[in-house]
Length: 292
Length: 129
Image (cartoon, rainbow over all chains, first blue to last red; front, side, top):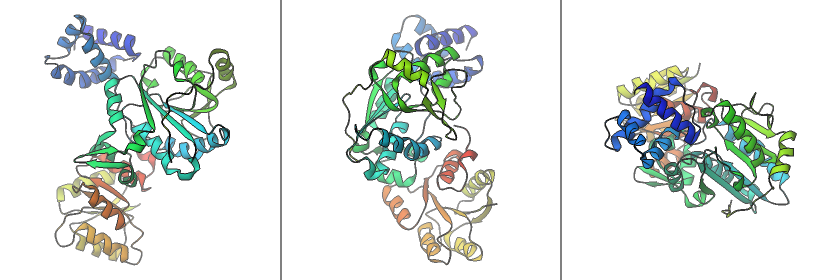
């Protein structure tokens, strides 16, 4: 890849997705785009760039999707999936006992492992959630990734990473060499295509926002901007969950970490003043009814 | 140091599994079939057993039944590691007392996450995601 190819791709990805590639990430471009070039019958990255410069918007979309698709697995990092049933949900059950509804957003839902892990967690909580309306909204930048998430079909390799075998047997159906998550779990998750760089206020307010391992790809300014808007999308008594290597330090005063709960954050008072000033509260949508 | 018994008739698999599990801090014992593994267990019970299904002399499923009937045989954490990938085999294994189930081929990450899942290693020992 020539320096000018790299610069072109870097700028394009920055503009289209906010992905901030440093010079040491050339290998990432090669590992993702060489297969894409081959699939499009192009000799390599230079030819791919030529074609994009020539105005192939389909290729531009494919390149952005290929570069922003992140590896994920069920119950990734484990800790948040302990906090979820042990801390977050019990707290929200108390806070929402009159409304009896919970809204959860997976802001980088990717191929579905995270939203479905949360759905399985909720099912495992059993009768505590009977009569509650539960909405899990999974968004991702990539259409292709969302299609995979909707289908809920995973390879043997994918279901072995992080998913306890008891949950595989309980919540998946085997289809030859593949496994599909059961319809009732799939029905708990709604899918929407969404670029975090764009306005997402139409999604309404959530009690829990999972936004893990996606902000690491953005520059400081973009992170600050997204945190500000995430704060408006998070209920004043709600939770934000970030990835293990992520933090709000030096980026926003809208969230503060929960003591002794790694990765867990809550909106601050300053965030709630912004919320009242700028957006309304609860926006109901076409919710899938959860039947625990 | 925790011990792990690796039971597999393929010495290549035993070698690969040994390297991965040593890296996770286990002391390793090996057996090439279920009969041999029972002898090992009657001398000293390991903390963990990585268990193949199809083996000569005594297969993994029969070994597991025998192990769970031994005094103290409910203690070791047993993780099947086999090419048998259908839900029928998995369900039988769980019913017979297996704690986890890995379908071959496996890699270091699968072994590590499964061992963490059953509490044999700490999640902090996992390579960063």
